[in-house]
Image 1 (cartoon, rainbow, N blue to C red):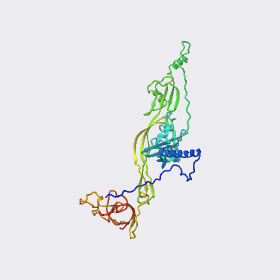
Image 2 (cartoon, rainbow, N blue to C red):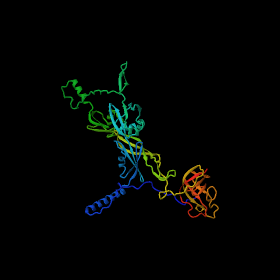
Image 3 (tube, rainbow, N blue to C red):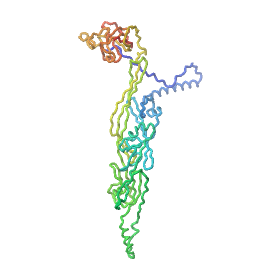
Image 4 (cartoon, helix red, strand yellow):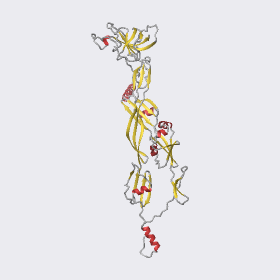
Length: 497
C-alpha cells in the first residue's frame, strides 16, 4: 500500500560563509566624503567576495598518494590539492587526474629510487619502471651474456618485476629507501696451456676484478710510403716493398654504439664486418644508420641505436561517489560517514627505450580489476521544520524492545483495486485493512509481530508495501476514518512479542 506522506529531506551541510562575520556596530551618520568612500569600499569588497564564491565554488577532491587516501576541498583545480595536503613531488613522480561529473580524483604515482652498482661505479636514478630491465635501461646499463643481476643479495632476471623484488614499489617510494641492484659481469675466457702444449678456454672463478686492457701492436703504413724503385733496390727491400703495397687499404671511420663514440682505422670491407669486429649483435628493434652490406668508405659515420620495447604494468584508480541517506538508527541531527573505496584499473603500456632512455609510452591494454564502492553520509532523520512530530508516549506496559520508526497511515482506498473488486482492502497476508493492521518491511520487523504504537494502539504486522523500506510502519485505518487520522512522523514503538 502507498503511504500518504513522503519522508522529509534536509541537508546537513550548513550554508557557506565567505570571510568572518562583522561585529555589531551602531550606525554613525556620514557627514563627509571620506565616510562615503569608506562605505563604497566596504560594499565593493562584499560584492567581490560573493563573485569569488560563485566563480570558484569549493569541490571535493579525492587525493590518493601511495597507500593514503584523503578528501580535500579545493576551489582552484587539482594542482592546489597537492599543496593543500602538503604532498611534495620528487623527480620522476607522475600525477594522474580523473574526472567524472562533479567528482575529482588526483593520484600521485611515486617514482622508485634505484641504485645500480656496476663496473665499480654507482648510478642513482628514480624510475617508474615495473621491471628490472626498465630500471637498468634508464641507468644506461647493458647486460651481456653470462652477467648476473642481484637485488638486495637475491638473484633476479631482467624480466622479473622490480616492485616484487623491492617488497613493493609504493613502500620503497614512500620510505625513500632505494632498491639496490648489483650487476656482476661475466669474466672473459682465458687461454691456459695444458700438458700437451695445446690451449683451452676456461673462465676464471672468483669476484670481478679490473683487468688492464692488452696493448694492441700494429703498423700503419700509407700505401705511397713504399713504392718499388726502378732499379738499384736490393732484393730483400724490393720484396718488402711489394708486400707493403699489397696490404689492403685502411679507412678512418667513426662508430657511435649507443652513447659511446669510437674512432678507428679499419680494413673492414662492409658494415657487417665492423659489427663483427665489436661483437655487436643487432636486436629486433635496433636501428643502424647504414645497411649491413654497404661497403666501408673513408670518413663514414656509423650510428647504432639500441631500441628496446617492453610492456609495463601499473594501476590507475577510479573515483567513487558519496551519497546522502537517512538512518533511523541515528538520533535526529546526528551524522556519520561511511567512506567509499576507489576502483582499480590495471593498465599495460608499451614503453620504448632508445639507448636506455624512455622515448615513448603507448597504451597497450587495460582491465578493470575493482569497481569503486560508493560512500555514504548518514544522518538522523528530521522533519521539514527541523523538529520531529511530537507524539505522547503513553505506554507503560511490558515489552521486548523499543524501536524508533517513521509512521504513516493508509486505508483500503490506497490500494490498487476498485471498491467492487473482491481483492479490495485485502492485505499481503489475506486479512482486510482495518485499525490494528499495519504494513512493515519484513526484513526489519517480521510479519506476525505485535507491537504498540503510542497515539494509535496495538498493531499486528500483517501487510507490506512498495514504499515501506527499513524502519517504516504504515498504520491501517477503516474506510470511514476521520480526515488525516494520523500525524505522519517519527515515533517509538514497543515490540510485544
